[in-house]
Amino acid sequence: MTLEGLDISILGPAMVAGVIVLSTHVPLGRQVLSRGIIFIDLAIAQIAALGVIAAQFMGIDEHGFGVQIAAAIAALAGAGILAWTDRRWPKMQEPLIGTLFVLAATGGLLLLANNPQGGEHLKDLLVGQILWVSYGQLIPAALLSIALLAFLWFRSGRLVGAVFYALFALAITVSVQLVGVYLVFASLIVPALATTGISGKRQLGVAYAVGILGYATGLALSAIFDLPSGALIVWTLAGCALLVQLIPAVRRR
Amino acid sequence: MKKQIASLLLLSLLTVPAFAKLQVFACEPEWGSLLEELAADKIDVSVGTTALQDVHQIDAKPSLIAKVRKADLLVCTGADLEVGWLPQLIQQSGNQKVAGTGNGYFMAASQVTTLDEPTVLDRAAGDVHPQGNPHIQMDPYRVLKVAAALTARLQLLDAANTATYQQRAADFTTRWQAATKRWEQKAAPLKGKKVVVHHIAWVYLEKWLGLEEVGALEPKPGVPPTSAHLSGLIETTKAGTYAIISAAYQDQKPGQWLAERTGVPLVVLPFTVGGDAHSGDLFGFFDSTIDKLLGAAK
Image (tube, rainbow over all chains, first blue to last red):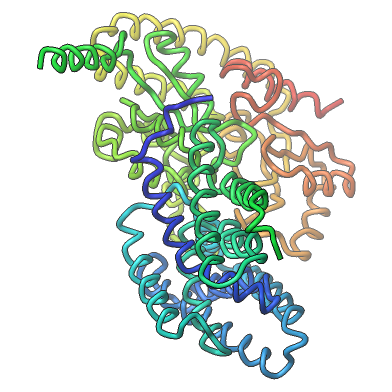
């Protein structure tokens, strides 16, 4: 046990990153759950990573803004394909998402056979480390999240077809680089899953509370017990989701 | 008011450390062990990684940032070995003392000449380090050079203990040179032996002991081998290879695969301090490496 990591200047940026990710992922998570396509975030993240590898293949600077554009374009293209398959074969959307995921992941390996350094960027993109984020990095993410939330609010939370997939692709491309794919998955699914028993505005409130509590306790415990932060937050999110089931109003169906 | 002043005084007493020992953060265990030899209890050392970890990547823990934040000196390998995490760690710590330009930033590979420095930087060659091969800890002569440079740095940062550092450095040098001679005598039968390696991380050891590297499981670092390469490697390995060498932190499956197909023994070397039960310090690390290499003959 140690208290030296329990420092707001160390954990602060990570907590803010968590709140930014939660802000868009909690409302999106509810839709993902109701559509029954929970692995879509993994597929989109992998496609964004494939876009980065392809961009390097074409000789685009590996650290610049071009990489972000490539990631976003690839994610949007993937979202376009998924929106189309959703219309065309709605019953087969989940297996199609799975297939697209493995194609993107292995496609990356095939491209990387001749470009090994891309491997590090692929890893950066998929295993963003929540502790390494700086406030400077958070500003573009926050601006994009505000834009997405405003759009959601404007549409009163209902998203259909291509619009849902496009918004989702942009949100995932940003969040995966901040906190990594495990935390993105957990932020999306766990708060939504914990609150399936309630509906309307209260659902959103409780889901946000679960998410924020999960990140806060995860970060604090990772400092106290000196454990990797991202992995521990996934567990505290799940723990908080279980804890709120003790409240009858949340559990009630 | 008096009460406030009193509590402020009390607070300031609490925050002043009892002993202002030099705080050192070592990225790898070999430098932690070297610091132990050179400074013993004059400094506080914390080591960021273990021998069973791939130092190209580490998990971000809050304590790592806290340790770098309070460090007066950072001792790492450099040559881009830690490029995946050390820059972020330093930036996140906000500690100017250990940032790239200050005296608190000590990169071992910058103190010696590195091997395999690429003349042309080409992606096609694999995940190569533009500043040469960073795995210098396996050459005792380079370790000694690093020790001398590190002693100078310790004196610069902590002049009060200059005498101790000088005396310990002299003592270490004597013991190290005697041990090096002993290792070289013991390892004489290894001279000219052919080896196949897992990852091309052994150039310093090979050059020192006169081993000849005839092939690699991962000829381009970070790229999985193709089937054509592997079938060629089986032939090469069968043609009088002494041993297949792999590091303790690596997956042993590829090495075992090759060993089964060729009958050539797989030798898992500690790679750094702490890599096996006998590698408790730098001396044990070299003892164990040479014993294990000699053991392959049986």
